[in-house]
Image 1 (cartoon, rainbow, N blue to C red):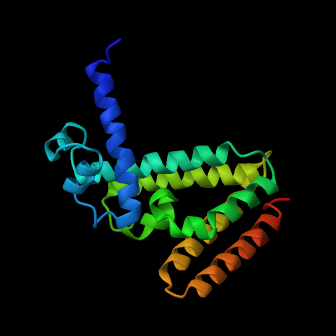
Image 2: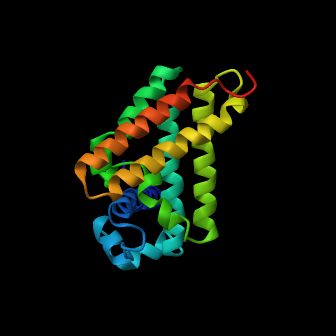
Length: 196
């Protein structure tokens, strides 16, 4: 059965978003031109505007897509502290540090997102809040609102630690930063949610 034009267009759009997400996380938003992004997707520059109104539109879609995937991944974790601790250890691993193109969009793009237009920042805000909500639900399944401050703190520790570990040139110092981040995240995981 032949695919419809709408299905082909949706598949092409998905391919552009997926390849752009990896390129953005590897080379940065500013370091990734439309020609390179379209080449990565195996398409010509002219095809870009059939799917996105501007590079900013693509960035907003990539950010929303990446954060939705991260939220869904966190949502699929089993309940409880052990699952969150395993997530923390994977997030703050040398492998994740060394492979930004396939990793978390927060640590890879946060500094540039802060300089983007409102549409990108709005997409980021919505996605980040949904991730914090999932973390809070893991921390306090029956009353997630009581764990929101701790969830924001944990999210902050994870992202800032990974950014700092990637920024330094000394490999041992970078490893020490990751270890310290895991320790600090565990302290937050051991906190009792507010109101308990």
